[in-house]
Length: 378
Image (cartoon, rainbow, N blue to C red; front, side):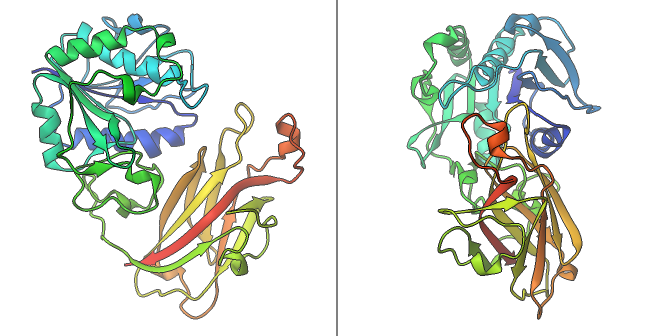
């Protein structure tokens, strides 16, 4: 059976292509799935990747890319106009891209279409066998966390592919404000595989997982232990956790560059913020994790950059556009076993809410809020 694998994309910066979409593509290419073609469908990103193995073609409408453009093993179709997301249940950009993949598969004679979102992964051979041998119907996986079908991973073949195409032809207006998971006419929901939206917590993906969704793009490399070429040391040993905001145990670690505590978090102010961490074990490399929310204003401040220095040594750089769990490895050579460890957070893209958002009165120069921080070692 001719098989198409596809996902939807949108990237504000080149960093997002490399941090989120390239690992997904590498995972698909190295997964052993017998895909005849891999397709990324892009919702009008202002920047596109220059990957040597990916052919890019563009259009203005869904039907425009069905029978024109390149026919290589990896394609990226780019809508020239960005539709985006207008509300929690109103996402015309994602829907258009999802529809494109379904109708592209039908128009180009594919017998099976596997939809795996860019923050979702088929972790085990068992999960990959399920989607690559499914031959009739439209099946989704399951989210135990929310007790509903998991829209991020599905497979349609035979009569199911026709059912998927019929759903895709509905006008989007009929679905606005409705949770797609509840109305998609799946013929089967597979509950025999182990998986969930693990990325919504800071905990790692468990070793018995068959699939994982909502996977963050900027965690420490060992988090992605199932990825081709990555041998994560699992699990780490817990060492230190600090929580910020009113009454948090991390307040005593704050030095310069912080606002007054609020419920559950502290804002980083100015261009840098300092934390004095306790003495840390340095007999092996460690993992630093942080729960952060960036100050962003569409069209003005689309993302916040965050550079991490430990005891004067630059260890990692991030770009953050949404609430996220960030993670990076800290070399043992950068740690101090007996003295306070100075963690310097550099954030040059701060903004003043009162100048950028109508109705705001906050005149501070804020960048990201910090909810919690943990340091673990192997």
